[in-house]
Length: 170
Image 1 (cartoon, helix red, strand yellow):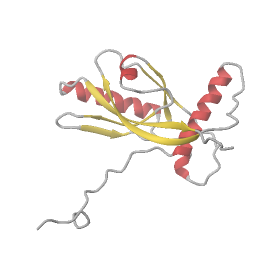
Image 2 (cartoon, rainbow, N blue to C red):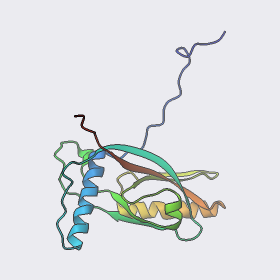
Image 3 (cartoon, one colour):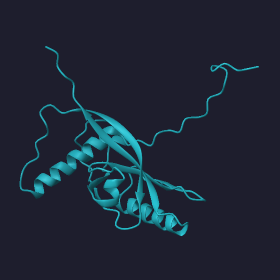
Image 4 (cartoon, rainbow, N blue to C red):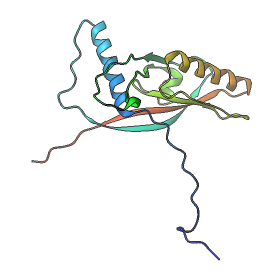
């Protein structure tokens, strides 16, 4: 007898490793303020800010040669009014990409929420909302694991804010 689609059990879904969107926006705004301050100017938020969607992807990062990845940890600034504790705190943001990181599809203002190796045995660490120091340790550990298992790449679980705008109809 064949089971209908409604009768078959569905496998559990892997929960997406997503950073809190308000926290992400706050961290980007904090970074923009710091950049403006270093340049001797004042940060002006956009008059018509975009609507954001939070995206997630896996980036295969080759570890032969320079990774080409610059990271910055933002400090917490309470620019988002909320009682949700998960929206508070800084994040580690990608601030520069060249070479292997650019080839993997990373862009400035991405945040890395996990690192893994597809080796036997596998390796995976959740670094969602971790400090820069803990992120660096996780990346170094993943590289060492990958190299010790004759692999030349690690996999980064990346979150990215994707901007969109509403078009006003006349």
